[in-house]
Length: 132
Image 1 (tube, helix red, strand yellow):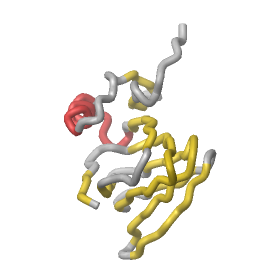
Image 2: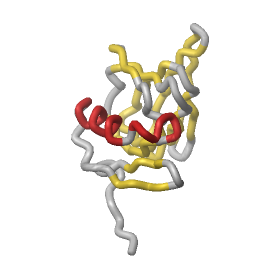
Image 3: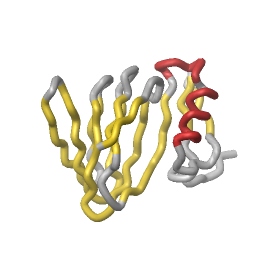
């Protein structure tokens, strides 16, 4: 029997064999991501983290996912996504209900107008971050 849960607190992993696996409560730390990555490393580039976050200000870092695409869906508010593609900065403004794709190897960050909530489907293997 299905039970509802808060995706912003409890992300899920899309794994091999078309599985959807609930994850421990997200605590906002890099240690949480490290533990997640270690637990599902055997899924390689095919595993996906599905998460939802609400932001009230700009991201404080850039990130890149070298081993797969990332889907970004603005589910509430407005966000401006910045992507570094072949040395050029591209800007994508997302309103509620709109989506964008971060291709593999593209550094990206975002600014938020007021507050916004995003849904992310991320190929997390090898993810890197750098200060903004």
